[in-house]
Image (cartoon, rainbow, N blue to C red; front, top):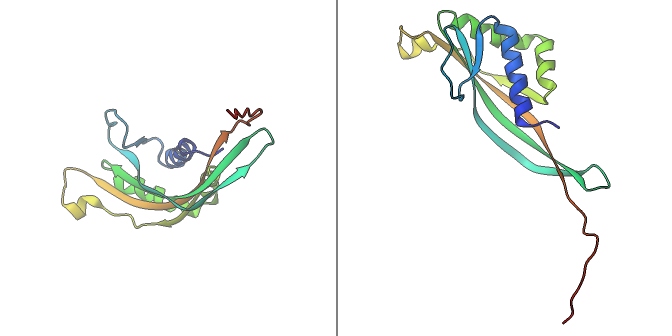
Length: 157
């Protein structure tokens, strides 16, 4: 079963394997940010498309709902090495091993935006930042078990 936590885990594993020893964090966590330099990941948008498929897997009432989802992962680098760290992540899609890692969670990257030097764009020399957006789709699977009605009693009063 593939769920959103497994997708996030694979995205984290991908980023962490490229930028070590720099830290990788999810930007929506409720914790202090690490020392510079680090990478922040954030899923900006997520939407479903098409109808979900309901697959009957067993005679005992187990079902799987399969739904295609699109999502945008925002990758931001912070600190003096921000542009280099983000650039390394951006270039990592040339390696089959990284595409295979994400494929383990049914994640397919279909577009990667250009790396932007946000420090230059917004004119904040005190804060070194760079980033890009990564556009992905995935197949999300949710399992459920439905019980059978074994006996029906009809009261015809």
